[in-house]
Image (tube, rainbow, N blue to C red; front, top):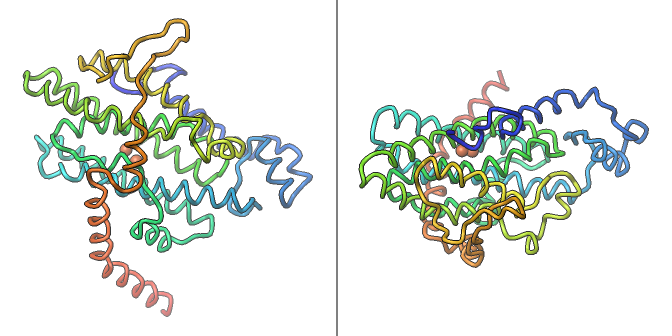
Length: 344
Ligand SMILES: [Fe+2]
Ligand SMILES: [Fe+2]
């Protein structure tokens, strides 16, 4: 077993990504329901959603659907970009050349995810400059998980296993999201996330089967990343403000609590193979309910970190603003070149 996608059969997460990809490719031939007879407006939109067809940029869509998607996709894109920072912190200190090459490739993948997602958001009629401006001005958020520090090399393992692991559990259902450009971006992203999760798992496995000191370092990293990873699924269902409408629009397919449970159930057997403990004394299998019982993360802490008061919020934003300013000349040069080419 080496990751969340390990199950080699139809129950694995990657198998689900592949099924979603097949469904996406065959959707244009599938019956479009009453949508065919209602070519414009709200009726058309509702019928497309009911027929499990994709909404494309050319289709009419309710304003609130468009706004919800812009918010969600932008927040997702920002998270990919800010998420490069905690791991970038270890590129120059990776223990071997091979580890360094793998980590570099992973961090580059995250930049690519950010780009696909900004491009998907742009199909909704907002431009990239506006999105970046909303991030650097703090008007749009990114995932609170990236406001925690990476203190040791084992944190790179814990991030891959738990953070990319939680991301993939969250994102596989988005491969079936009703908005076409987002669903298509997510298929590619999930395939890459699966590699990220495996590389983290493999780092932890190596450490936990190394010296006593290495094993302690791996355990310490898991102890620190476990609850923030559980919090990545968002507030509990009762407090989740956008969930119900997003489910009706088929943007979201499962509730926060259902996905969190799925993640816990996947991690428990993997932790056993890693020979590491999940830091929850109440964690146990409930045979009657067919699921693990676990301690919820501290949602007050989650809200505090989202609001800007996590251990690294200020540092992450300052770094992002500096990188944006430092890159101004590249944007200017690219724009001048494009203008020159258009004139020619
Ligand atoms: Fe990613
Ligand atoms: Fe990733």
